[in-house]
Length: 383
Image 1: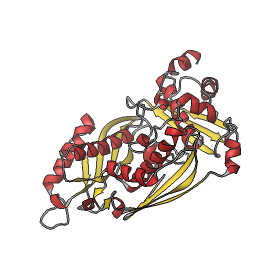
Image 2: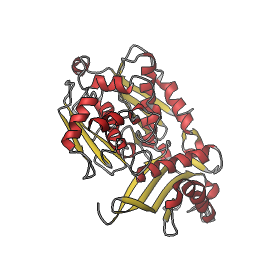
Image 3: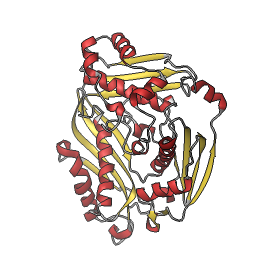
């Protein structure tokens, strides 16, 4: 876009109730894939005050100790003390898992897609990660909250937190950070004498230790900070808000900068194209940008349940491309296997790697195979 405009993205920490559920669902998936790579998993979790429900459809030859797994995840996140409103050692856990429908399985077993739907991938050149800057910074903020909480540098912080960053752009380029929003769960230790808000000292600590330490030179004297803007955030996590798997799909992807296909990721094995094809769409978009064939690239795949090849492949470079988009579509179909089985093999998706995706976004993190740009050179040459 031309002229001045603002873009905002948010993220949430590991202790946010919805993210707790994503991590539980993906931990179940990892536990199945560890011993049974052919296992089928569609796992949903629900959390509320004192209760976790794990349900869905799982077909596997292995055994998952759901009780033990859930308590381990909650302990790792930090919900192991009553002062944070939820205790892994005493909460109730209900297992409501069934097997996958044989009507779906008969189409998937032959290599077809596990569902219909559209999947979106995106990349841009405004950060080293080839991701939009607002979501990159939002993730860095909540990562930093966890870091200073666990190191006890800020020993009053709890597991639940949210961040939001607004970037000012000019003619398509980010020029400064306009607004930073942080909501951090905390103990009563930092409340002022009224008991209704945190002290000014604590507010400034969070700005200095969390925000300014990760936001860099794009912060200026006019950057606005909203820190626990309601006053306090003592009651947080599942005690204050119900969580469900799959409710943070924009946090998981590109921060609302581009469209979303609608499907969530966590708890789904890679035969579900909601997940695997979205990973491949990111891989395609990133390789096109890494090849310098475009400064921005948006990719959409469409699939029909039980069918292997996508019914559509669409690309938009927002007038930044060096070759026509139809030529890019031809190159993608030539150099990437877009069938579910091919995606699974190329991205090595039948491994227990998913719990680590369930917080801080699925994209822009080089530990994942779908972030590999080794095909950029051949795309550039062939274009």
